[in-house]
Structure formats: C-alpha cells, structure tokens
Length: 299
Image 1: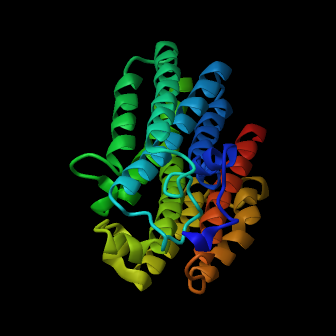
Image 2: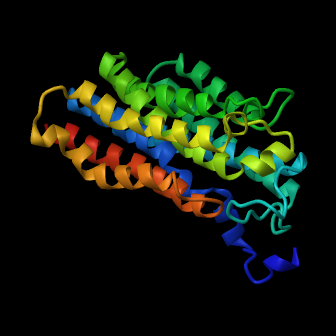
C-alpha cells in the first residue's frame, strides 16, 4: 500500500470517514420529511422528532460500520477499491475497535428507539428490531443482503417506507397515502445512492464474490436503472401536487438543475469520479426533502 502514502487518514479523521458522512442525508432526509408532513397536519412532538433522528442516524452509521467490518473480513475491500479510503483496511482502525464502535452506535439506536416506542407506540420496537437485523444482515450473516442483489430494495424499505412513514406515525399515530408516496420518493433516491456506490465497486465486488445488483445488471444496465430511480422524484412529486402552484412546485424547481446534471453525468462519470456522483445524489435527496419540508410547514 505504499502508493497510498501521504493520503492515509489517521486518528479522528479515520473514524469520521468510517461514518461515510456524504451518505448520511439518506437517514436525515426521510425523518425531516415525515415529521414535516405530520406538522403540516397539526401534529408534532419535538422530543419524538429528535429521538427519531438520533435513532435513524445511529442505524445508518451501524450499517456503515458493519459493512466495512464484514467486507474487510471477506476481502472485498483492498488496494484496488475506488471508494474513499477507510481506516480499517488501511490499518488505522483495528477490527476490534470497529466492533466496539458498532456496538456503541447500536446501543444508541436501541436506547433512543426504546424511548421513542414508549412515547409513541410499543409496536415500534418490532420495526426497530427489524432495522437492527437488517443493519447486520446487509453485509454479514449467512445470507448477506448486499451480496444477493438486495441492497437497493433494502434501502427502499428501511430508508424510504420505514423512515418516512415511521416518523410520520410517531407524531400522528396514523398512516396516509401521502406519507406512502413521500416514502417511495425518498426511498428511490436513497436506492440511487446505493446503486452509484455499487456501480463504482462493480468489478472489485464481482471479483470478491459480492454479487450486488450492479454486478448482475452490468455497467450499462446500472446506469439506466439509476436514471429510472431519479425519475421517481418528478413523477411522484407530480402525484402529490397534480395542480400547478408555485409554492408546491418550488422544491422540484430548486432541485431540477442538479437532477438534470445527475441525469447527464451518470452517462459520463467513471471510476473514482462516481464518488462525486454519489455525494451529489445524497445532496439531491437532502435538498428536496429540506425544501419540501419547509413548503409543507409554510402551506
């Protein structure tokens, strides 16, 4: 690994990179949107919102830690990886330290989720348990979801359906069609983030026996699917707001330039340049969710 000398992160920087901060909008955005939708209908609990945000972030960080840990154990991450440098496979963080970090963030998720269930509904404990199992099963266990082309579907379910409708439910104690549509919108964009990640790592994943959806679809098929996932944003926004009003369509107008850029860029970006596309896809999700949340609160 001498070719990486001078670029290896150390100390706190290694842990910060292990968080995968550029992907964290995938857990922040749906909590914002689900809570804003509830607030627009006259329901909002500030403590429940904070707890949901902490729980969601903790679960995503747990997924990221577990993914790095299990992939390193299986030899998926090596010198040929195109993604950002990780402290584990560069020796800056030991497997034992990462396991402790994983247990710590899972503990935060459990505690925040338990308090949230006590405030809203004990049924949330079942959803929390499913989330923890999915976090560990994504890259680990006897049937790793990521290795069987189920990563994008898992993201749709847990970062779309569960996150948006769950955050809406903790405020309202109910579910609506609009909450389901918003859940699909954010879930599809989160799946697009995952797809870019897997497209970038397609060759190294295939060599290591990690058969992601990108491995099965190939380069061209993955890029076509990415564009289809992006289409979910304008199409589902149109379902939610079928009549033209400037305020209700403002979030789509704000995100349109980035959406068009991503549509074009996916046909041109290769290798490490896809890291930028991944970050921009996450920014698209956050920008839409934040702007749409503000519109919901202002309406």
